Image 1: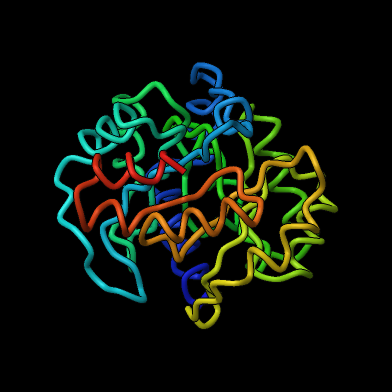
Image 2: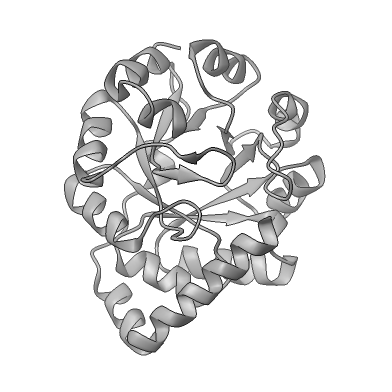
Length: 256
């Protein structure tokens, strides 16, 4: 599944590059105002931080929500206390787009994450051109040399890489990069199976001073509390927010 998702995202990026050449995207990226400081926004605090996600669908659950105006949802997230907004831009299985990211960027003053299957420098540049402050890098999707190159490009453009791991070995690879923001995804993107205990098993491998983000398997306050007790500084939440009352749900999570 992960290989399919990455291949599809790269195919879509190549199609966009035919319409909008690399040179133009690079110029647009460099012309953007400086990216927001996501590390400051997500720094450990007395209460857990929430990265609230604009998410229409997923391969595991299918259609989740009709989101006609992602900017309005993102504005609600910011008003409700989210520290950052994640925008799924993968088109085929998650039904997102870079247009969603640009709309959200215009609507909020907190950092915005481009969440996609990133494997090429063009995708990083178009993320900055669309206004992203963070870019997701999935360790399982990339050989270490490419992971390092994309990580450095993200930093050179002033953005923050969120390096996502799904195992102890992948956490070690993220740490070797010097990552300051590491996510542990309970959902294995190869199989889409959930391991709710994964974060607790690997959190101690993430050095002190690195921000720890727990991803997936966040459906209620008890899930947030479990992650907090295991050492999470932040949780990334999508499904629970878009399938219910986003403000009430966000408020309950931020009480942890």
